[in-house]
Length: 216
Length: 216
DNA sequence: AAATAATGTAAAAGTCGTTCACATGAGCTG
DNA sequence: CAGCTCATGTGAACGACTTTTACATTATTT
Image (cartoon, rainbow over all chains, first blue to last red; front, side, top):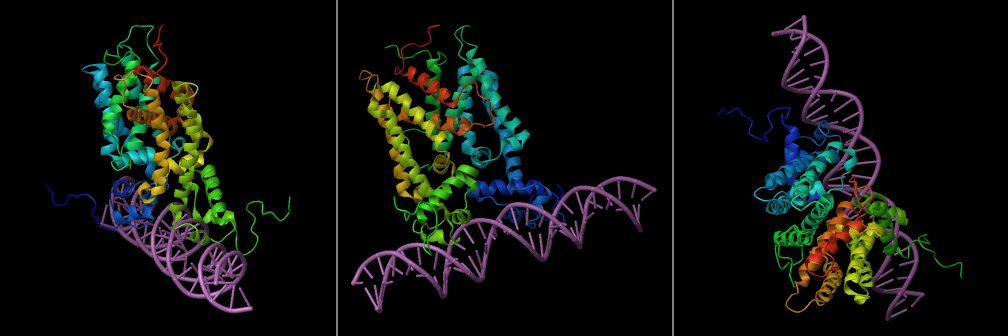
């Protein structure tokens, strides 16, 4: 190891050398600490040890910085969901539930990314790569739904896209309303359990989940 | 009719006479026109025809104004849901679906209120009346779920609270992700249809919705 | 009519976002 | 290595916003 290695944030000279990354990290920390509205270009610059104007060499404006964070968030998100799905192993239903859990886990473990992705009103249209990254995340869910539906006999298969949309909406709703610990509302169960139960019940009606569908 | 009646916004003299209301209306218009971040105290004051300092005679700070709007929003929201539920008539299931539709209708027809209620990160804890109003809205859903569950034989009744939470989360997720027209994502169906289908499928698995469980 | 409370204004301090002219240094070219 | 050029950072400035404070005006009460 060389003592010359620039560890992380320290400023060396006139040029920072890593400002773009430092700004992104600072912004993430700010969002994590103070919520989405706690981020300001000025404060991020301050934490990176540069003047308030410096960030504009790397991002057109504040929204562009947030968009970059959201983009990276979606990439990680996609990776998490894909890993949870794991090609549908060991069985499509179990893997599908794992995807749901991964959704909530991401919202819980990466609140800064999640906030940048969903709680910040970015004009997705203005950042095509962002739109693409979001589409990619959703594609995981859609593919999983396809595979799940394929376990049913032809002719009895509900539309996979609809299933993916329902599950996504449910997961997002649970995360948005109850994801944060102190959401003010006291739940009889954890968000994870709530989502899992919801997904299971939903899939049951489609004949996709554990056989027992109440045989009253 | 007397020509002296102060129509709405015009300033009469040094005192506005209706500033509090005028500010709330201006803020709502701003949110509706430019999104939640488009609201500023200064601009609201400008539209009301007063100096930037005047609003502080009526609201502690910007967040307090938003909180007041959110509060009124929840009151209207509660009224909408209650009317849709209509005491469970003509039948609990149909009325329950009406509540779901009313949820989306509110998000669509009153985007400014909805944004102030859900898309603005207000510390609910700091405004107890706001928390109470939100609880009241949720109570409509919970009561409806109770009544719906009561149509099942004792012993086969799922927990109503869980049902209410699931439906709320699904409705909120649909509204948040697909509620706005140009959400960037092209859907095979309208948000209303998507939510209705989701609720029906979900309730089916509980034995609460139309018997037919896909007889194709 | 006078006193008081409510509600407005003007001015100011502090923060931010953003731009512009200018400074510095990194990396290539000869 | 000298010199050129480009990327990246600085400082100063503008305009907008939030919020406070001292003061002005009007409503309301006594």
